[in-house]
Image 1 (cartoon, rainbow, N blue to C red):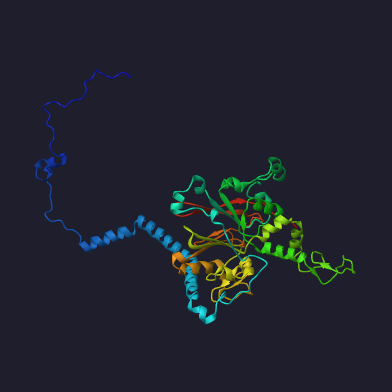
Image 2 (cartoon, rainbow, N blue to C red):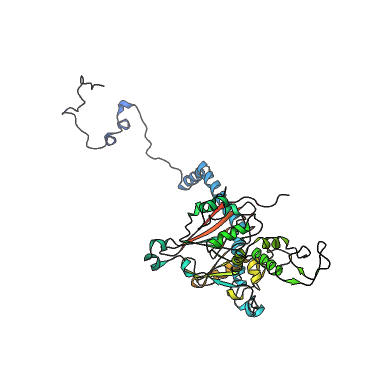
Length: 443
């Protein structure tokens, strides 16, 4: 489009004065005095309403304004929400913490006596406490700063209850031919392996118990973990199987069953005449080879990692079910460490039953709540940290001094892992999980 040059651009004439002040200042209000505009009466006194009346009028307008009504409704809704949150969550939690703190007073130990004060008998057929090799511990601080690249990648991977769920197992066998991998792992989706980018040269696996039973392939899970030199703790299912395995190697007083020779001189407890109700454990024990059984026997009840900057300056432990706070690992009850669900805060007496059950002490709480309250009383440098599983109903839970990893994989939940990796300022942690099939028997 061509520029129109027929008209010159607008320019002020040189004679046009340029105002030096705002135009409003030139207004003279001549109508007040000039007769040309007619007779105009200008009152000399203007009567204004009293200041109190003006304030009342302004207040009335403000109170009737839609904006005020909106503000009132919003603030009322926020106050109602805050009240509901406080009464339904914060107030009960604060009251519970306050009561637990008062109950866990050290002076109560001498008045009533607490669990763990008396001596516990020694057990020679299993390891109560094991210690993780320091070479697997992720590096922190100056050690991390000056470490090699491979050492900086060191990780611990704690795995929750696997229960023989072979399709969700962590990764393929190392040191075997691709042909065998293809035969053994056809149609297997290693979701957790893909998510974790597992590296056997720098990662160390730690199974938090209940590696077997319920799922379809417990032997394969044990072979997998043993092939990676994984660490483990004994869960209630491992304990039941190992007890069944031990009794199968013991001959008892003859007690022939309906399908046995009445003239027999021995009675092997693997026979169906045994009526302790542990036939599934006995059948699974018979299906394991010697290496798989040896791997289970190597699992202690409690695995100690020692201090780990970023988690605990005192100690980090792995146990299947739970620990009684204030009681050292060697004095814990092994059965309850594998089966614990609740704890009486007045006596610290644990139970395998849930809090609220008729068979537990009134006022009992889920054991981890008592554990968390106990640790909160201590100086930070004296607090302990624990990883556990066992209770799929409570599910995966991340507390300040405890982490639960049983995601209910065997019943269609999730296989869950806690990944702990090194860092200059302390270890970092994250929880990773993958979905599982439902392996429960359909009736």
